[in-house]
Image 1: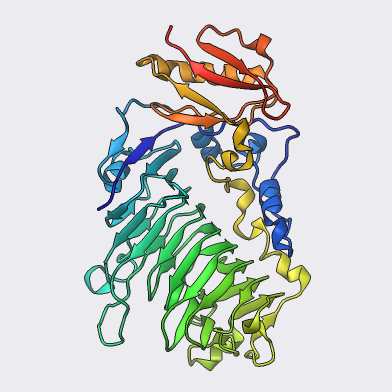
Image 2: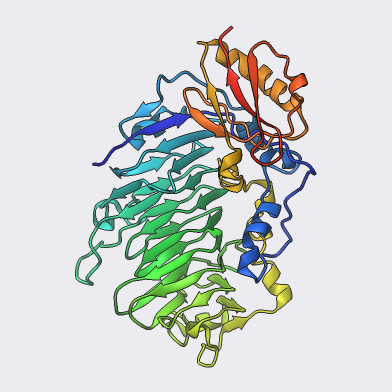
Length: 450
């Protein structure tokens, strides 16, 4: 096991005040030009502060009014210990920071622990790995990471199932990387490695962005309703290979998988985009780059020809040698612009009411030279009592604060601008004006003991 440092931080996260106020829009389609994806995302998935009247009330409470609890340094030896420290019935955002290294654990986040975020360093992504198989645990419970709770988020995390590739001889060789059964979950810059059944996209609305998913057969399966954006689907090995096995059972079900601006890569040939595991699967690929590994027929009815009439397998403006339509099966839906919009917008997962950008993302958007360090010195229990008041002070100082993050024992970065120094009169907080790096006023923020 490598260097493991799991920091549990309950934090007032990114108190962001923007000008002008911009609200997310469920109906705005993802643009065909991939260079405009980030602009679309930033516009339609804006900060918490700009959408207070749009978000789920429970989520708004969890994100905007968390409590800072004294947990020493907040370090745990395992991720499981950190998860166990979250109280049953949790109602505030909990960010668990994972240090670089390999965590050989089988982790389950129960339904009664919502609002948990797993956060890793993008330059040294932590690896969560285990070798569970269906033979020992059952298929869906073999996952290295099982998420049953709502409002889950993972950023910069690698999840693996290290069990060997199925050889067709061993029974119960399915080995999941992750099972996501909670509603309203988001994954940013995560990697999932497995073979058969890598991800059980089980139930609920989910969003994957800038991810990597690797497998062999049915490696995205279940009854979830998920939007995969800018995600690589990599197929390994030879023989029969299938990416999706969506488990839709009726036309009334609001479930399905939509892949937008994704890439289909891998080894071997004859890869199917999906198979009709159940009677009414719904899968759409839009603006997706398909390499030559894709089978010319595209889709498989699972040797049950009656399902040709009940499946919904759609393709929309895809590219690459694997996207050629000449030999596609007849039941492939070549969807038009109007129909496509429902699959390539946040409305597909009702995202405007719950989807938030990843925490700390503001640091990637601001020139590093403009970043100021903010050190919070914890004055015992006064910190807990003072949080509400301090937040009011900070929010009242100026109409524009790019990012403030207050956390117990953390040295964090913040970028503040357009602050009026004459307004900073509170005796608890000392403001140190510094010369601008980019023609704007910048301040370092330090909380002082009284």
